[in-house]
Image 1 (tube, one colour):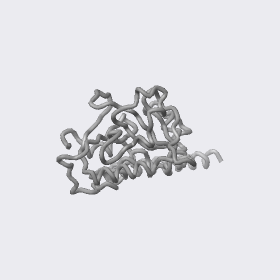
Image 2 (cartoon, rainbow, N blue to C red):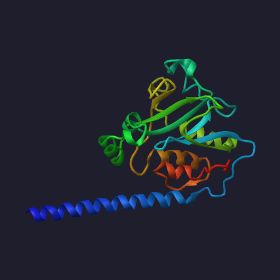
Image 3 (tube, rainbow, N blue to C red):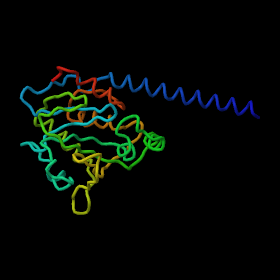
Image 4 (cartoon, rainbow, N blue to C red):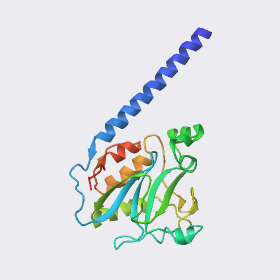
Length: 228
């Protein structure tokens, strides 16, 4: 019986290892395959940024422009200190447990990882207020998009906000004084992560990125230094 159980354990470990290796290989391959390969940055467009903290990616946009105004959804009074309201916002989407509890890889809890892998409808939009220009410790790359492309980006992001019965966004405290979480729409799993979401938003606007990018590196490789 012990020998049989040991064999079963070995087979299970081997199967799990195979799945992980195949997933990582697929992530690498997907991140190398381009979507919207012929896209070019606009010469005189709206400046956006793609940013990563090593775990999560997000898109930085002006809080207001002639193309889109974020103030109806993201208001100064949502912050504990409204004076922290920025000229720009860094926006991401992801799993509620991972987002709230895992600012960096070292913070990841097993229960959140399991929930994220197998899927959850408990998702959030994360918004961090920034002032531009400003020094920032995270890896960031800029790009310029046309007005039409930015409208598509804004529409895709806006659709992720879950509104209350009065069509208002639903904020809750973030990591500090300049960021917030908002109730969101969508389903998170191992095949559609926070980083897939970033690429998906850009893809919908016709911007070149990887086909499937579950990890932050797969997103950021498409925005190297000097690409803007």
